[in-house]
Image 1 (cartoon, rainbow, N blue to C red):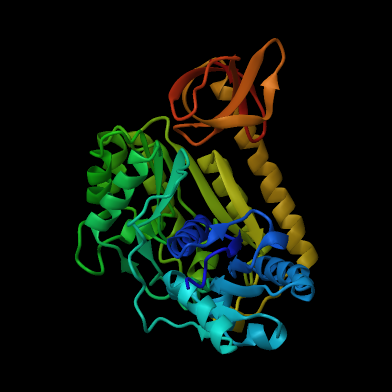
Image 2 (image 1 turned 45 degrees about the horizontal axis):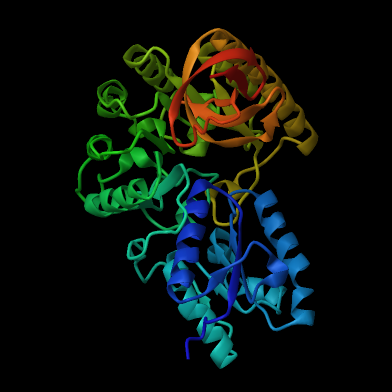
Length: 446
């Protein structure tokens, strides 16, 4: 008898787009075994939490979730387990902390999850499958999902070799490995055939795709993806500034499906801080690459990441970061207070900045960026923006027999727009006239 017949899986995902992609593949692997997927943890026979450990707050969220679902064990027999980065980082310690868990699986075990869960149920042994000895398998392609989103993620590589001093990624996702180009292309073709219009290529550092194992370059991969019939848009994330070459900069101009947006994390505006972070570039190098990008594509949207209050960051260092924001005028940023992580080299550094001062700096940074984000959005008012419609907005039905939809411009700005009640734009790239600009979105009409 099939162990998974009449069983239901619930999976919750924390963290980055790569975790979203991995969770999708976990769902597929259970569906292959005959398991049903449910949106309710209380109805599930199997509960899996796919975790993140990039910051302490993400770890706290994971343990909080696991504490909430513990009570479900009292009411019925349910298997509860953890996978992903926190599982890789903590291993058996998670079971020691939460003895009601049934299994722990690291990032390389995601395609073995049905086997792990079945083993835990049949042997009463709580397996811990972590480490990087077993290479990760290629993503499932045998039976396409019954539902494909308009915008889909595709992982092209895993792990990282950069060892930034604050970062835990090399320890929880392993060293850098690039997927074979033909496997990536086949997966994208399957997604497009089933309704995807936009693909985002994922990797810890997509710029170094193929360099280590001698396959094609990332720019060449984009060229191949650009040739896929039926695909409308290509995006990618994340890029490391030190590996951003002229061939990728030129790709924005050469390939019509590649969206004019790049997320290029800089982390700090101070060379001294960047050196302690082991980022392997200087601010002048970063600025030169931004100038090249804008020369290649004048309307390119540039977003970035910042870490505030990194070890020994002075007020002068922080002011250099503010100066960089004024110089570049980013379209948007993600910014976080520095959080020491297990195994990362920066745990050995002295951290002399108080939490209060870090939070105050974060507030000043975000306040400054808000001005430039609003400024960039206001500059778009009155223009026509090509927008990929993804679905109804939160408001949905609008006044006067209209509908309000949501989508993104090619520069990755969120647009809510109205159409006639009977028009269905989902999956189409439509022309939207922008009439209003807000801090984090635009509004317009078809």
